[in-house]
Image 1 (spheres, rainbow, N blue to C red):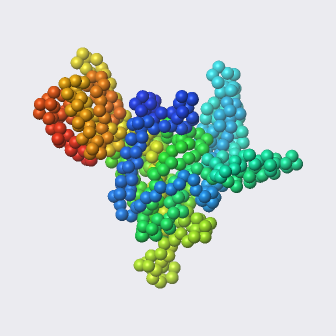
Image 2 (tube, one colour):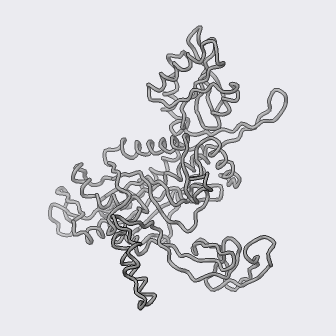
Image 3 (cartoon, rainbow, N blue to C red):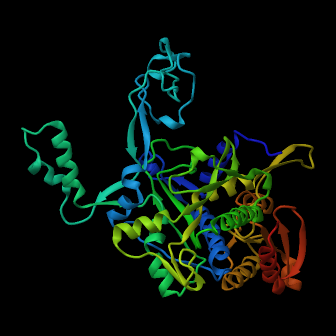
Length: 507
């Protein structure tokens, strides 16, 4: 049975900074909350996960093709999709500690329950008591039930496009005689003329480009459109490192199918996507499917599953697989006046009984978080192995057991000493690996044992040690990260040996 490990996040965040996976954005200026930079190893890990997803979803299939859409789209897209009016969270302020939080995520208690809290939310303050209001929740930080009224907070980042800053025009439209409501309406009209939004999801671009992709590539239903890219949400609450942040990356695919076949395709894709994670994970028990209850379903969905992972704080969403019906294509067709439909001349129209059926496809959407998958794979890979050295002292070996396909560095080439021609021979091997398209590292710093430990900690699957015997008989020692076992191979075979093992994987 999978076990929750609360202190694992502390270890992961420390390792990520120390070893160059993830840094706080703008750290020298105190950082920017909820924004992160991926360092030399982090960008490779993220890119490897993205490439593997693309290979499995696009390259290995004839029925899926890809696009890379603009982050900014016509504002009408977001009005039609419902994001401008409905993409919001209930925002509440604590009147005690001033924390701002989402009402739907706050701790729940029965109305009238007496809660103890500290004035101002600071330790050492006056101890107070209050009763939970009819809304049934309290501040998640200080437990105070004294809260502001709920108000809706739109999650989209808004900016403007054009040579004129709309904020500079506000002074020209506001009049002293206006009421507060009139001023608010005037400001909204002025700023709204040039308003554009950073996309909160990649999905809508695939809907509005449905017809262009289908016709240009002669795709036949059922088929999918895949995309990997950044999305932006002005989250009220950001939490758990990169799990929930304002800037993140998604790996999404919209799969268009015949009306009536969506149930079959939902079953196919939820199982296919769950199996995908299992191919690369060490602990498959920490992945599960959870079906949405009726009251959880989005207004456009008739069924949905979450692929969840057991994070250190508990089960949480990793990917959603939703049956979106024909809602999106229908809405965009109505708003744009363009027929976003598909004609199948080989099918009988069920409504007329005649040959040839024009219909609006239904959609199955597997939507994965690339950023969350990076975090998930780091958590899954982290391992501490206890052992006793020759002197009887207990030691701990930290290993990132990343799948070889995801590992940032595939092999480390290590000259045993920095003399006697060993560095030159090692660099020849590095050059051969890189010519073969394999990302490897040359490392000559510190003892061979410390170098092994360093590469274990960053997830390098194999270390190749070049020693004096290498100069004599042209062989190197290949050390396996997970088992620690070593074997001798001719240099000429070393590249093939490593490539074969990476291709086969470790699971």
